[in-house]
Image 1 (tube, rainbow, N blue to C red):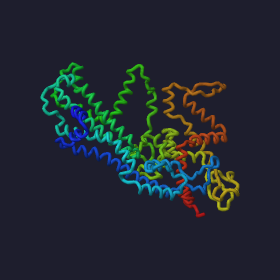
Image 2: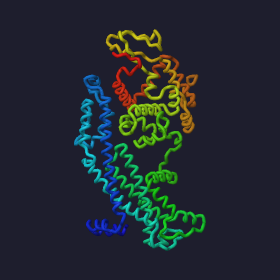
Image 3: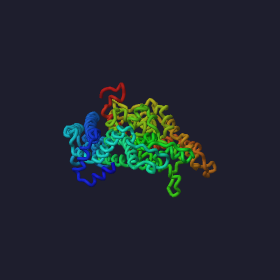
Length: 540
């Protein structure tokens, strides 16, 4: 292969093309077809996925339209219109950005206008032949060249039975170059390199499929995978040249007579290792570099004392996510609870086969688990609190019940003392009733509870929080005593307890991701209408 490359470098493009297409190689057309069809199929699938998801977005906009400007007006503080949903705009722009000559975000348009514009873009876009498609095709030239060369040699070495023809020498220990002829060594390198290419190509296909799932197939994806394939093959070839027979090298170290092997026969260990190292080039090298840090004194080491406590929370803890659903979500780049908690539920609905109500519920559960921790989340779930909004309603919830005559309304949980006077300035159906304060104490007791994670973190770090002593001095205490002191400190007075607990809920819920989810929740709730609030809700 190296000799052919040297000859092609000295010849012109015509001679090189003739050398490729006129050689008596039965596998060249299969390799050429794979090299050409793989990028074309990926680009075609990308456009088909785009068209399907744009139709889903258009249907979503029509089904759950944002509030129109004439109904809501503008924000009193900024004067900007609140008629559009930023979360939906980000999803839409992701799929139409390369179809438009200039950015055109659908902010001030109605739902029907936006849906019609999206349908026009879908009809105008072709399954293959857009401007972005040609850019991707050009960026895939390097990948196609590596694929052609790799599959051509892979078919050849498989046809040869993974053995170099004409090699009859025997090699015992040491480097293969010292006891095998250069031609035989070159043949072995071709076998190992072809097997490494097979693993690297499988890894690249996986990356391409994952990029299609999240609509992230770009020129960078093709260029990166081209570099990864080339680097993987070179690294495996260098390792094989240095350690052609690892078992024989180990036998020499332990004073065991190594068994001679025939030149031209690649050891079975390298037949298994070559595709495996090609499949995981980055993961293996990064792992080796991380583990070798402890052997080099001048390299800054990682503080891994808390590795046990900082493990990722798996998606299986979410109610409704099983083993197979977890792997489907990983295709969208969601690997743990934190990824799901900050994910856009509309984008998850568009990019996965799950419904919008299901994705909203999963994200709301993940946000509660991410904020309060896994231990408290599981305990709260047994106390009928599943999502971040359940906790918000339990601690600080103001119910708005209908009132036909516009008069006051009595909260059955609070009794006659909780009757609110009629307000002539408010609509008849907007009487506000505060939730019972008893639940503030019930659920705050869980939020202030000490967990095993806190105890283990304090034990590993030897930290002891400071609390006031009985004689107005400060003392160091355990985390259990600290949590107990914090609860007693905020619960001495009922009024202060309500203020403190609702303040805690306020900063928990005042998160950008929670606010985005609340906006989506409210718009879907508005589209369902007031009759969905209660089963016996009467018509207005």
